[in-house]
Length: 284
Ligand code: SAM
Image 1: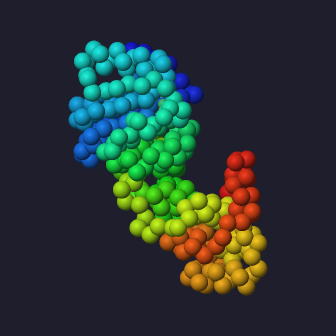
Image 2: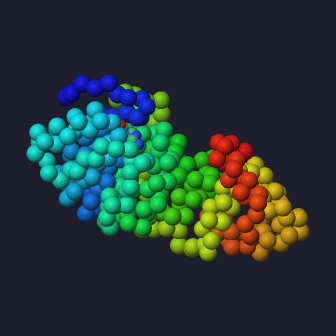
């Protein structure tokens, strides 16, 4: 094996647990994809065994040194179905890389996993599935159910667009160098969005983010803050949406957010929440 110095700036924690690699290859090939788009193949830990089980892989690696190592390996092994792209997944046009029937996968660099998830969601209609190794806490947030501590705006917004399941949990010792956090493999199935759809998705997103921004407030109070409503009007809207006024956001199922978003109108306060978010202000 070629010796390398892992680069922290690129989140290089390589998967060295052979059982886990086999399981990932089984899961992905089991879906029967016509094409796999891999984010961050590294030295090909998953890419190479997977290439024997799926028709075609496009692998995008940001690090020129690792791309070079992987390119040499691919040539040595005479593998012809891996197309290696050296570049930043967050900067390239991914539409041409996601023909229908594509599975997007990767053991993601944790620091940029959220922007990667957001980018992938933009091409969700083309995708069969996404399968990602994520920091355990992020995996818990996106798959969380109402009432759990991890449930928040990210849970609602992802689960509105896809069914999310944790497939496997891995301790940090499965990676080299050993990271500070444990991990989990997550399946995001865009073919199974939440069955009820909203009329105005932009408003739904802003409403969900706004309500979780005030996650300690009751729904009655957050409606008053977000929309400048008086108590009577907020009470009436909540009654109409069948939501108890004293409930807190962490207990509300997706369906309740949907009912609420059909009964409110956009306001300046919602844009204010977006502004706070851009400034990096955390949920309360
Ligand atoms: N796939 C290998 C494995 O499972 O062992 C490596 C995974 S490592 C956690 C993350 C990989 O993503 C590294 O190879 C890193 O260089 C690459 N990477 C980091 N940021 C990236 C980006 N923006 N675009 C593409 N690759 C990136």
